[in-house]
Image (tube, rainbow, N blue to C red; front, top):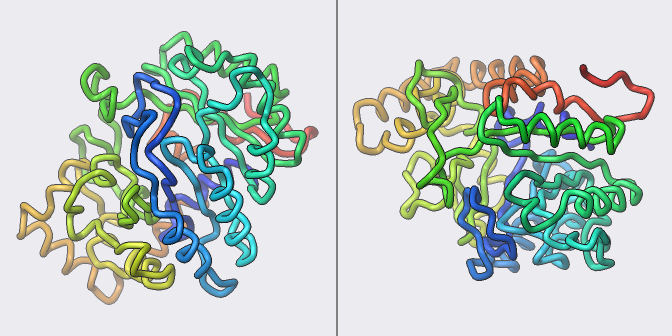
Length: 349
């Protein structure tokens, strides 16, 4: 499964499920949006197994994305969840900070954990390279690729002009002969970076701007305590209580069909996905603006709202992964998400 396929599904309501497995991580990257560290919450394993085990061939997300913290600190759980998902026809992707690769090897427990996984994404940037050398990370990704899993890299830099981004993307393209896609983002003022990263206004982000449809309100997100939110914004994932219009349920009590219906049929979420708001701050603050919340509820309850939601998702999907990354990631490097696939495919310039 290529990264391009995953990104194309991102605007489609309930086409995917993001599940955080733990806030723990042995690395201490200065830009970590979840402020992960050696100690932290583990998402309840039994509840995760029950929830993913409730997927059926008739009612399931197309993609299960496992993340953290560092999800591969729980390798047996990754293996179990990916196997459960695969039995229903759901494909699984894993995002890792590559803590296990410091010596360039891929331990057997990691390869066992990935045997049912369809896509592996490695985080690599100037912060990760202080703890996991580039050459070691590359060797480990080669091992994973050789096992038959499609791979990609998630890269972060300070800005589009950051010379590190030019260097690392060129290095990845050369090392992997354009067989590994690259998703590039810029550091955001969240988590550990909240105190030092300069805010960068982006559409549907925390910067001010005209209202824009929000594709990030499409996939349910399982937070560290099992709460399911409608948004992957870290402030939403960490907030307690979660704003009512962004809370979809809890994996300890709800199953996938219930979460899917709430995601797809919520009038407020339909409004956010089709009309949007000026910023994530405005979205989170809707509970403090009763008139605006009521207006979103009315608009999303209209007879045409469901059809408009579906049309908007289809148009965004048809526009392709590169267009979506230009909105939410680094516009300059957006074409790199199209890399990967058979060796004889023509690579983006």
